[in-house]
Image 1 (cartoon, rainbow, N blue to C red):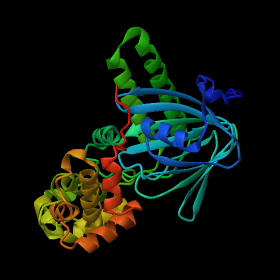
Image 2: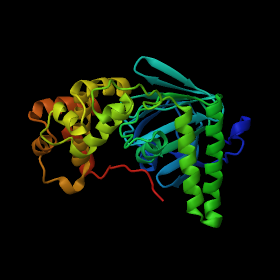
Image 3: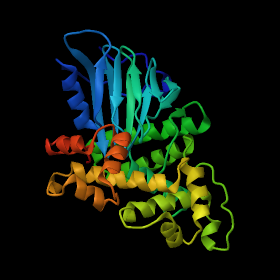
Length: 348
């Protein structure tokens, strides 16, 4: 099995090495170690699952070339701290998010959501290039690009048009980053590779629709902070939550700390994320709780203590909210963490 017949803008992508797994579970474990846990279901009965795979990592950013010998259904975990871009080199794949289905082709990439389930189907021998971008790196470049204090909580669309002028520039910068990554083994010049990575992320932000792309002036309320766009206010609020979500504070307290009215904050988060401030606060508290449940050094904390420390007054309400968001109970998460199945992307 070899990757052939690349479209012109993918001709620079090298093929990978052939891997064979006797059971789908082995392939799931391979990809879990590689970048993110997901369920993998071959859609044809075979004694072994064969694929071509090639990976390159730099500062938490990964370029992966993958091709399966049979059609597969992929159900990734919520990506959380990774933006994943799926580019078919040839053929197509399909991604279902809720009731929406998005078809990926060599001219249109798909981006699985970071905070909700998705089901993806790859066709037989349909090679893909996957780009894994750390959320922290993307948010840092976005804050610089839009001259705002923080881009925390950035959300992106589920597809990316590669035929648009900005999409073509993204592809050009992607190739530059790839070439610099390959040259690292010869020159070892990480400064140039880092600059190429930042440029690629910037081109990505120009090409994809995201929560900072449409800045709407916030209502003036006599405070200098009201001069920021609603989206900038919303991202600043999420940045504040990253540090203080587990404190005993109301939404009005966060708004006061930011120097804006509660109403301005509500309008801002609705514009940027289509979510209320209280929903974002709950999501951040659940994220912190999940981190503690997976932390093998925090096993002395009971689930009830973790819930309380993360700002939840009722254990039953915490458990119900947690299961709704992550598809498993807090106890199941803790069991998985204690078994050592904690997954991180490779970082060079």
